[in-house]
Amino acid sequence: MTSPAPTVPGWRIGTLAGVPVFLGRSWVVIAVVITVLFGPVVGGVVPEIGAGGYAVAAGFAVLLLLSVLTHEAAHAVVAKLLGFTVHRIVADFWGGHTAYQGKQDRPGPAALVAFAGPAANVALAVGGWVALQGFDRGVVWLLLTAFASANAFVGVFNLLPGLPLDGGFLLEALVWKATGRRSSGTLAAGWVGRVLVLGLLWWVLVLPLIRGGGLDLWRVAWASLIALFLWTGATRAVRAGAARRRFERTAIGSVWRRASVVDAERPVDEPPWPSAEVWVVTDGSGAAVALVDDVALQSVPATGRAATPVSAVAVRQPPGWVVDGAAEDSVLDVVSTMQTLQSPVVAIRTPEGSVSGVVFAQDL
Image (cartoon, rainbow, N blue to C red):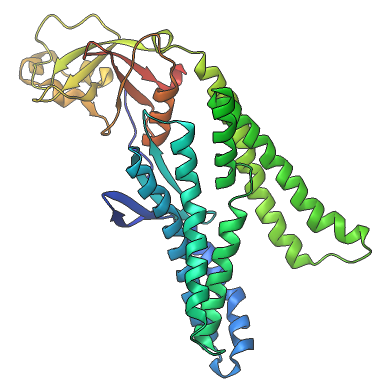
């Protein structure tokens, strides 16, 4: 009975209001692509810069990274203000994401969190455009133009009403509010996301041919990459919506394993051991912090059991792994916690205040 450590999403580069901020390893790829593609553009606008154009292009990649982090920081700040627990911010190849959760998850707050990211990009675009007015054509002018244009595009594009875009989360919240079921919103926004992909491919591939023109291979390549990203995210949303619908109908009590609580300092040979499927270990304050590893327990020799505390055969669990719930509640909060913590185990604290069961991902 072991719990692997959560996967680290990249290099930790700082914190924001206590929230860890990570730079995904895949971001290096997009930084190199931007540098290689934007370098010649800089050289065309400022011919005398020579090879220094690639250094300017690398600077633009950094500006885009700051834009992504600002976008995700806006999500995180609004989420915290609305009472959500924010676990991490990640910037990666596809842009980034913010992991958060909350018992008070409702359509209104979810929509506000979703809208915050594009709003931050639009604000950056406006700021870049205002700053642009003070410079003549040159390196700074080019950087500000590219910065403002990129943020304007990202802000508007993200508001398209299909998952995995932020506009898709807004549509999800709208349908969720109308139907009372988040799964319906997720399914609707996922299918609209697929329709957006088809519309993008029609615009880039089919429409130019109908008009008698040729295909711009560079445009086709970028559109295909974006379409792949959107289709993958939309498909995941459709599957997640279907899974959520099933979980809405699944009670915690139908999948949990009954648990008994043992103190961390208790000797492993002290009778009687609780007759339960899972043993939850508590610390000195009574908080549930670990699970007894039955394999490790059986490996302790009989002669050493009296001197071996339970803590020696326990697997520490991540903070936040205990979820409040009753046996008749749906497993939605359990699944959300597993996804957020990247942990396959969640303990259930019932209204009576005790940990009565443990849910394992394999049982779901």
